[in-house]
Image (cartoon, rainbow over all chains, first blue to last red; front, side):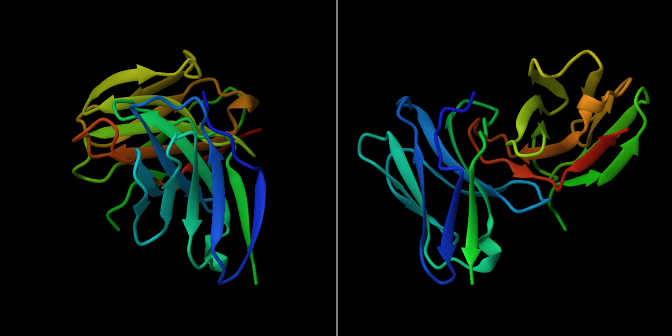
Length: 110
Length: 115
């Protein structure tokens, strides 16, 4: 079952950074934090994942607190195409299924 | 396009009929997953294959549901005697399988409507 808590919705102005928070206070030492997003009527799209250290790729940055009980996904320059539902998932590296929860619906406003 | 593909994209059926969906994973991916998503909810895990072996099933996968991956490539998900509660988006995903926690790549889904 979902082990994360996310705000149900957020708005962000186009061109600004979108910071999406996630609480995972019961995370275990061997569990990774994954982020996916789902644009309307499409399948989920992988964004990024990490264990302890902050991670960055061409899509986003993932900031994980030192105690690993929360994290933030950062989209540095949000565009209208970033409007989607964003899911934060914790999963052991040996696990095979994702528990998605209900995610955060991000709306990027022109 | 070398991503995960699913067919059909949409299926409308009458209650009591059988339906079958197909998923073609990314070619070198050993693992294949099925999820179900209802309106306003995130995807829910149904089952998972490692090559042709079905290794895990969710309690959501009732005895009316059956999934196969006969040659370790494409997979089919069949729902027998469909019910209105089966109306949902059925998503397929695949992963390399080099390590258990590698990221999954999702297909566009098959939207099922049971009348």
